[in-house]
Image 1 (cartoon, rainbow, N blue to C red):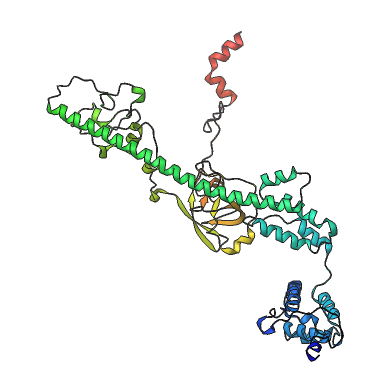
Image 2 (cartoon, rainbow, N blue to C red):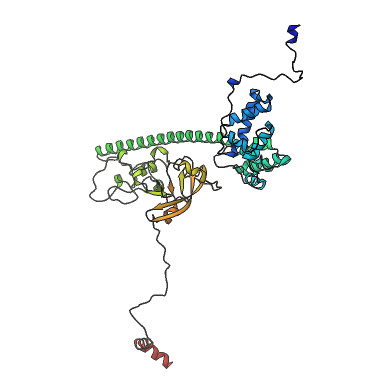
Length: 453
């Protein structure tokens, strides 16, 4: 019977058994930061979860209040007497602390923050949706909460095409809108990777094609050089007619001649190469591949341009040092062909991230592909004694800051002369004053004939 008595509830209560936890293995949340009262809701959730997991929520109210004050920290000992909570229940203590730390919310302002929230540049869909749920928590939307969050997703999404697709669905739910936005974001990132890989394969293929064409051109001129040398050794016995522009025997069409736009190295005239030059005093020329200009090689290759033959001389680039907001100096590339001023996202310090605003403008690169615009920021640009306030577009993975035409003109880096209108029939001679008497004396014969008639 003694064994049977061990399982009897001594207090006579019919409550379910409470799971026992090892309190030493469960760490309470950190102390509450009284300097940030607005953090009370988050801290309260963590504390209540700790009370449940540790099993302390089943204790007496006095024990729960003691645990609350202990976890909150030393400052809680000063707050409780101010609120007259020495003998209050645990529920009353939590309610009073809620009223103390969180003042009465302005519902209109909370709804304003919710309705003005849009997805920010670089912000993921998950972070955007989470922010909307957090803002809607204090808007008192009741049963309309899910529908209004759905509307903000549709309206505030940066992906315009996905937003338009959502608007076409009459029975769109919050879950469906969130899923569509996530799928579009994933697909966009995957397409970006696919396009980058496609460009790399295209460049490799283009380079191989150009290299093969270049080798054909080299072999062609090498064969021609050998033929010319052999012909000179035989005393020019060959009677085959050569082109008067490029000197090649198989060139018969002047419109397609590779030398038609070239500059001769001997006489500096346009339209032929040195091997076919007829100027006096010219010495006999031996045509070699190393003597050909890049233009001649491209022309002879059938206008096949490829990346392997394109070079950039950095010494000839126009670079200027621009001071940003009076404390940050950066080197800009002066580009008269650019319509706007751009800057790489890695150039700006982190403090400017909060100043970047979203924009709907699209910017295309030299190859007509759209660049990834993060947003735009209003900056003060200074060069010598000139200052210019302008929006500067922040571009991802841009190699160098670019100063476009607006900045070039405003900062007085390049001067564009104004075209003066021609004045017709308004020539004036300031040194001569033509009076009526002078005119009559100078043209006396004409006036005499007029009077006689």
